[in-house]
Image (cartoon, rainbow, N blue to C red; front, top):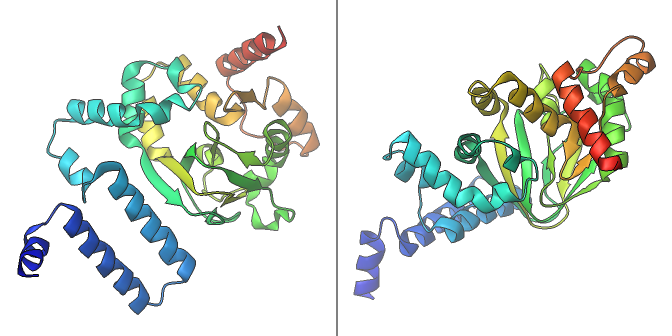
Length: 269
């Protein structure tokens, strides 16, 4: 008993420290009367982080290293996650390292609402494990002007990919062309799901180091394909402009349209 008490007090980074932190967190949320589903999500997240790394503060440990070494380490840890995203391998290793370093993890239990249409958010989500269901709004009054203009593109995406997203799929990319960050769909975890997020600001910072052609291609990989499936091609935006009374969607650049046309041709061969 005395030894256990001493160990609990002296262990500031190991399993006893985690158990103590976990218990204090549970007590705090109960005291504040957090909703049970929110408590479950928070506890699931912290348990997952501990199971993955066995450290309490991963960022604090990384911050002591030079940035190049931080990126090398992040890439080593995230290599399997990046490997599940089909198009990431098309880009230079340094780009992959910067992406790995910028990713943050989110873990959700089954039936958790990741976000709801009309919420504000600036993250793109990549699914590493589990499945999530995407639902488009029936009432466009919850959307801003960009969301209303983007409705046809989202419907094409749903027709091409379906509503159940799996490892290798991503969602939330509409924030890249939005000025308001208003979410254009609702996402709910179908099973326990492990997600990796990257912010719009982090992506734009990474793109600054890339040639224009590669930058355009990366943007369109996010906006016009999902996993191994393409859902938008050259000429789609022109058709939608006619259907939306002259209000175009975010147009593809000429170089990006060329890349999409090539991809479409390869898919037909």
